[in-house]
Image (tube, rainbow, N blue to C red):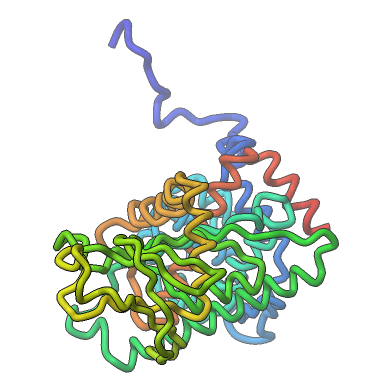
Length: 381
């Protein structure tokens, strides 16, 4: 074919064949995977098989299997059967494993048997990022997302699972607050953390807990009141005067404190004006005889947070741009079937691999592959 770029003859014998390393560029992310795994203390992280058996067939070193999985999730190849094929034909994996090609059963068993250790690797990489000053403690953006599990829709949620999950979330919050408290004690200068979350995370006691731990929460209040839709006044139309402990209603009347009550474990103070029955604006206020206003004993914390939100109108935009795209990227990488394994422990392992791959990609994009390898080696030395 004349006037076209022609390739080499497939049967041409090279007198000086190229080595596999020549096919892998110096800035290829696969080199970062190699350096990162080589610097890990796999036995301390909990991997099994780090010490070879004295008898029987030699096994694969856990570091090789871990490199295969990190590469797979980084390149959207999470299936053990597909990884088996890639090990046999993918030049990057040939370079990474030294031309080793484990079968799919061996690859799948490694992920199944080393779940806690793989999750520890994910934590170790986060610690590495913190040491490289790539994580900042002055702002934490919170969000949630739903990922499809390999399970029947009718079996996804039960009352027991929901209660257990709620307990796990509460324990996670306590661990996080404990970590913040520890950082406050150990940091010479101290810091104030700005936590951003959407309306679904609004909780008075949780916001107060943040305030007590020097965490400035930015959480919009849920729009659950039906009064506004009906054209009635809402609680926001009543102005609280802290000095006199009264509310000023839209008609200019004073709503004074009447009694205390407890609802959902929260101590509330109840107010209402005496002029409600003869008020000319009553039709826009409440169908009841008196318009009652409930005030939490720590309502000042919520009011202070609302003032922060008013001063920072772009807080929710920052939250969305910080955290929401992460879930979108992960779901895009996972494809229509988000998880390939079953049971919570194995799914957690898969999620850890996805998060590790995402963080690794971010570090390479920020620092570049060459600088990332230098930083990893320096952090390990």
